[in-house]
Image (tube, rainbow, N blue to C red):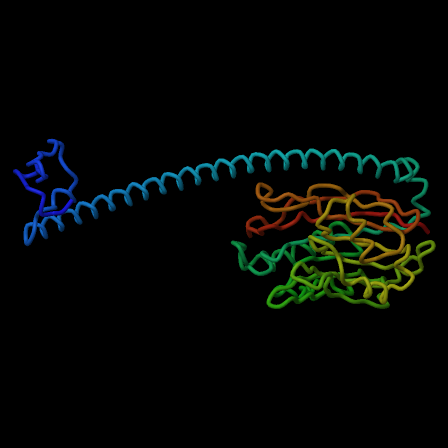
Length: 381
């Protein structure tokens, strides 16, 4: 239809010139495009502008509606995500409770086994005391926050931890002690045998430096113990590395079948041990086969240290590992761990008792501090 055949009648009504005459279109409002047909000049231009503005406004409304819809979809997705996370949290908490229950059952089973493997009742033990040599080991992971006044621990925490360490070791009449993360910086162990400390003792340091970080362990022996060789260092080649200290020693009283003992202070990695075994073998030689005492923070329950022992010590597996009690960490509302134990593979050795102390120097806010532990064992003569 040519534009010249369109006749405008009023604002919207239009007619068409045909060969038979004039045909009036229906009263329904025509499309804006049809309304413009037949116009020219300024009037048509103004209508075109109005049409374009109307189209733009419509597009804006459509975009706004699409944006609102997207926001609603995003909100629904976020809500679904939160619901999934909440469900996962509930499931994780349920799993943690189940694991804790299983650990408690396993701990009970280990304690029963330990009592059976001790081999003697209290009355029988009295009869065999004359045939054994008693050794008490004291050890404590004070944790690096205390040593470095980090995460809210006070600047005085390290010095107070050292004083308390010495006090408890003397109280328990320990002849062997091991410290973990009681250090200057991250990797230099604090000397326990200086003036006012464990004077006359022999200390072996286990510094483990890893970049700007690291770890530390120290081992010390009372007068009368003769250190013949020693070493200290790292237990892994990566960032999960932890420290250890090892010594081959001659005890004041010779142990049956073990003229020399291999003694190790351990801070085991959270994953596994892939370093340090060669050092233990070099230092201890044959003594590691069945004359080893190792104690410290194993980062595993007592019944689960055997893989770590195999990697570090080798030789015969330990005959017992005690205690299997919760020792980690302050505050207990944030942490849980059955980590601190003493183990030995010395034949016919028996554990007598242990003292798992409460958390110490709490006024210093010693974040993640472990409970100090003293373990008394009997070695055969």
